[in-house]
Image (tube, rainbow, N blue to C red):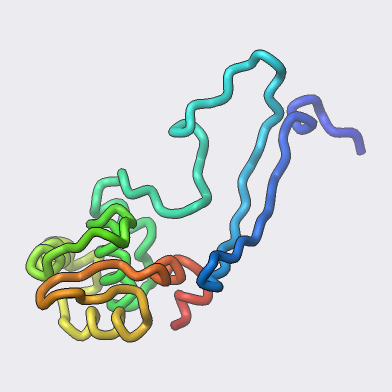
Length: 150
């Protein structure tokens, strides 16, 4: 069946990438053909399938990405949001706990220190100094189907 002209200008790209540490990432993105001389869309106008949108308000971010997650995964996700996904940044435990407890209904109840221990055991966060948390490269598995079952 022939495609309409609108469909002929669109393509879906599916990909699987493996980084230097052996972590595998997969996704898909919709592409559209750009005619010569036509300006490309601004990056903020193009939907991203590479990861979470850290610019979202905190409550909406946690509702969108944290639904159905365990406490440890929500903890890792909250640290990710607070650091903007930057594994070189750290956040204070008191700030994590304060934000968590402001969102008790979204987070499944009050903050529990065991969440941070489980997140560390799964390689999602680390505690470089007492009372501080930083992301580890494996934190993105929280967002995958495999990470949701861990």
